[in-house]
Amino acid sequence: MIYHRDNPFIAHLKFRKRINGQESDKNVQHLVFDMSNSGISYKCGDSIAVLPKNSESEVAEVLQLLKIAPETQVNLPFLSEKISIFSALMEYLCITNLSDQFWKWFAGIKANPDIGLFIEDKILSSDPEGQVLAKSYSLLEILKKFDGHCKTEPNELVSKLRRLTPRLYSIASSPLVNRDEIHIVVGVVSYTNAIGNKRNGIASNYLAHGINIGEGVRVFTTNSMFALPTNAESNMIMVGPGTGIAPFRGFLQERQCIRDKGGKVGKNWLFFGDRNYASDFLFREELLTFKSTGVLTNLDLAFSRDQENKIYIQDRIWERREELWSWISNGAYVYICGNASKMAVDVENTFRRIAMELGNYSESQTNEFFKSLKNDRRYQKDVY
Ligand SMILES: Cc1cc2nc3c(=O)[nH]c(=O)nc-3n(C[C@H](O)[C@H](O)[C@H](O)COP(=O)(O)OP(=O)(O)OC[C@H]3O[C@@H](n4cnc5c(N)ncnc54)[C@H](O)[C@@H]3O)c2cc1C
Picture (cartoon, rainbow, N blue to C red):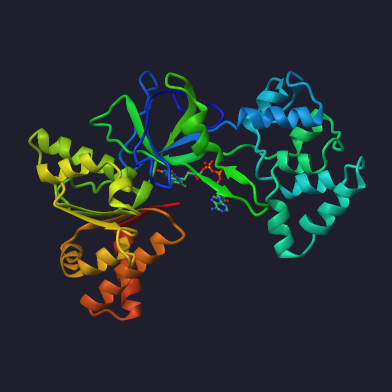
C-alpha cells in the first residue's frame, strides 16, 4: 500500500514522553507510533509526514464569531464528499497562515468598511513592516478584530483558505530494532507573534497535547537521500544538536544491532549540543550506553548556557579539528541535522575552515572538495 497526503495511514500513538527537564524553557517530546499492519518499510534517515489538526477550541471560536453552525456541510476541492465546516477547519485547512488570495477576498467584505481599509492600508500595501505585522493575523485574530462584522458564506470562506500542509519529522529509530514502530522527536513550537499574541505551532502542539495515547494520527513516510553509508564499516561523523539528534539515534541503534549480531561496523562520532546539560541532554542514558558499549567512539558535547561564555557545537568541532580532519581524510561520512537558519551555516563554515587550515586548501579548492564529498554522498544535511 502506498500512503500519501490523500491516503494516509492511521498510526496509533503508542508512547509519548517529555525528554527534557521541566526547568528547560523548551519542550521536547519523544513519540512512538504503532506501524504494525501498515506494510510501511522505512530506513534510517527517512522522515514521517504528519497531517496535523488545528486547535479544536480555536475552530469553535471562529465558527461562533462567524455565526456558522459547526455541522454546516461544505465542499473541499480535494475531497469527493461534503464534510462539516468544523472538520474542514480542524483537519484540512490552514487557519493561521492566510494567503494573499484570502486577504484580497476578505478586504472586499463590505459589511464593515474598516476591514477593507485596514487590509488595503496594511496587508496589501507595499510597506513591508505593515505587511509583516498585519499578515501575522490568524483567522481567529482578524475575526476578533472586526467582531460581528464578517458575514460570509461557509463555502466561500473555505475556498479562500490554504490546505493544511503535512509536517515532516526525522525518524528517530532503526527498523532493525523497531520494525513495527516509528519514533520521532518533536520540539514544541510556541512564540509571540508580531501583534503580541502567543502562538502555538500547529503540528508540534497537536502531537504534544492534541492527541491521547491510543488515538490515531494521519501519517505517511517519505524516502530521504539522508541515509547511512552503504558500507556499514564506513566511519561516520554526526552533528545533531537539539532535535537534530533524531536520525542519529536511529543510525546508532542500527549499528549497535549489526554489532550485536556479530557484524562489523565503522567508527561513530557524535557532536550533540543544546542549552544546559542538566535539562537538555536528550537521550542522555541511551547515548552514554552507546558510548560504553563502544558503538559510539567519540561523544562531544556543547551546552551553550552552562558557562558564562557560550560554547556551541561548532566550537567543539573546531577544537577537535585535527582528529576530525584525519577521519574525513580517511573516508568518513559527515552528517548534519537540525536548525537550518543558524546552526547548519555555522557548522558548515567550521568544516570549511578546517579544510582550508588542515587541508591547505584555497577557497575554490575548498568548494571543489565539498562538492566532491557531496557527490560521493559523504556530506549530507537534513536541516529545517
Ligand atoms: C526534513 C525535515 C525534518 C524535520 N524533522 C524534525 C524533527 O525531527 N523534529 C522537529 O521538532 N521538527 C522537525 N522538522 C520541522 C517540522 O516539520 C515542523 O516544521 C515543526 O514541528 C513546526 O511545525 P508546527 O506545525 O508545530 O509549527 P507551524 O504552525 O508550522 O509554525 C511554525 C512557523 O511559525 C513561525 N515561528 C516559529 N517560531 C517563531 C518565532 N519565534 N517568531 C516568529 N515566528 C515564528 C515560523 O513562521 C515557522 O515557520 C523537520 C522539518 C523537515 C523539513
